[in-house]
Length: 335
Image: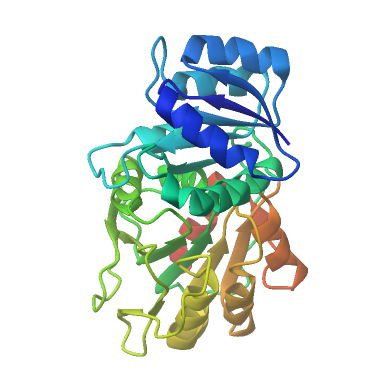
C-alpha cells in the first residue's frame, strides 16, 4: 500500500511516520506540508491512499481533496483535531468533498498510544483501499412498492461513505419527513454532534438519539458511537446490555430491534460501508414484511455492507441516495 501524508506539523509528521512504519506491506511515498503542493504530488506519485490534514497552509485539505477527486480520484482519509465540535462542520465538508473517512488527528504528545493508533490507521487504510472514490451517481429507477401500509419508523445502518450518502438522501427528501428516522452510523465517538449539525443543513431536524426518548416524527436521530443501542419494547432508545460489539453503534442490533418492535410498519436501509453490519438486521425486517433497500454500487464508496444485505436476501432494491429519498416518499404516499 502506497501512502501519501499531508500534514504541516513536523511533530505530527514524525508521529504518523512512526505509526505507519509498523504496518506491514505499507510504504510512505510522499510527505507534504501544504495543500497546493499536495495536489501536484498526488498527481505525480499516484498514491493508493492519502492521509490529509484539514487545516493546511496555502489551501485547505478540503480544497485539496476536491481537486484530487476532480483530477484523479484517490481514497482520502482526513485527519481532524476537533472531535467535539458541534460548531465545527469542517470534517463533514471534507466528506462532502469526497473523503472516505474522518479520523482523529494525533497531537504527537503521547507516543505511548502509538500501538492503538497504528491499529486504527491500519484498519482505516485497508478500508480506504477497498473504496471507490467517486461522486454520487444520478438517480436510479424506483420499483413499485409491494404493500400499501405506510411506515411508522425508518432505520438506517451506515458506515464508510455513509455520511455523504445520508446528506444526499436527506437533501432529496422534503423536510419534515412524516415518520421518525433512526441512524446507526459507524463514526468516531465525539463526531456525532458535528455530523448532526452538518446533516441539519439539509433542512431536517437532526439530533443525537437520547436514551429513554422515543424517536419522533420529523426528527432524524443519530445514535452515539460509544456503545450499541436499540429501540426497546416500549419504543424508546435504549443502550444494549451486551458486550462491546464492534463496529459501534451496531446496525444489526438497531435494525433487528426495530423489526421486533414495529413489525411490518418499519422500513430499513443499509448504506455504504465496509463489512457485513446491517445485513442480519435488514433480513429481520424483510422477514416481517417490511420495505427494505440498500444503496447501489455506483454511488457507494464501499459496497460491502449493501452487497452483503443483497446476498442474504435482505433486500431486492439497490438505489442511489436521491432515489432512496423518493422511495421513502412513495411509502408515505401509500397512506
